[in-house]
Amino acid sequence: MTMSTQNQARSAAAVVVGSRAVRMLHSSRGSGREISDSTPSVSHGKTTRYYGKSLKQIAGRVGLYAAVALICIYSFFPIYWMILSSLRSPEKLFLDSSLVFWPPDLSSYKSLLQLTNYPANFVNSVMMAMATIAVATTLSSFIAYGATRLRFRGKTTLVASMLFAYMFPPLMLVIPMSALFRIAGLADSLWGLLIAHLAISLPLAVWLLWGFFKSMPFDLEEAAMVDGCSQFGAFIKVVLPLSAPGLITVGIFSFLLSWADYVFALILIMSDDRKTLPVGLASMLGAQDLRWGEILAGATLIALPLFVIFMFCYRYFVAGLTAGALKG
Image 1: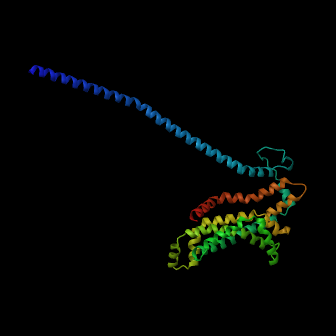
Image 2: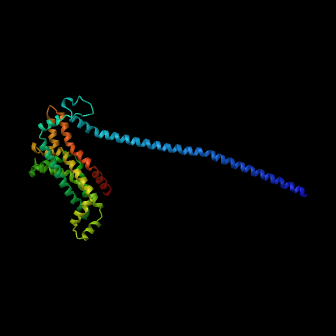
Image 3: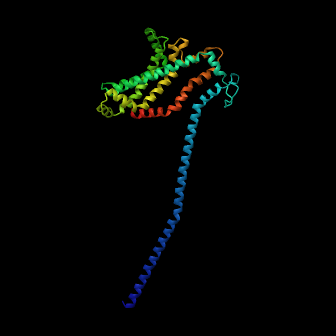
């Protein structure tokens, strides 16, 4: 092969390699265009998914707020209607359907004080509620503390069995209680009514405080006893202050159970001067002429202390229930 032929072959090979390189360069540029062209579609897809998620979140929040609003209206509207009706005149009680009670009419409240022994019934209810709070809180503290610190078999079953009383209707409990109180000389007595209220409030109080004391480390009491306190002093100075949310919760529960009790007070108390508010108000239902204005006014006065307690103590109440549930 001559030199010129070799040079021509090399030139042809160079041309082929160059054309291949040019095609590869064009193909890579084309794929780059395709990638660059597809980038806006990818970002558009991400934006669509983002707005889709935000719309779902907004719809979920709107649904949640709507459900909460419906529950609040369902719960509080009957109470508002009770207060509203108590501030209307008896002539407009069933004729006026407005949701505004201005100007208020206090004739139902004045008639309630004239027809019933409301002041005496109010004093009896307050005495029973305060006594139930004091005794139930004190006894449940000692019982729950002893159940957590003393070692004996079956103490968990014993504490759980104290809640068996809530499995029965109050009417099934009050009938044997009435027979026992007559034998013991406590019939038609506020002391007997106090014992009945403790029978329904003390088991729940012990169960709530048991959850607090059970999870409280004994090292705190040992540190107090090393500093010179007795075990009783450590219980008073260390355990009880740390259990304040639970004690407040027990007090609120005891107040509610005693203040709103009707069955026990109806059967155990016969004298008019010893009746509580629910029983005194229910005595107006037996008449042929039902005075709905006075009944609604009395129900509003009964519910008023509950509203005050809810406004000032609901944070402690919720904290006590939550802490007791987590610790128990």
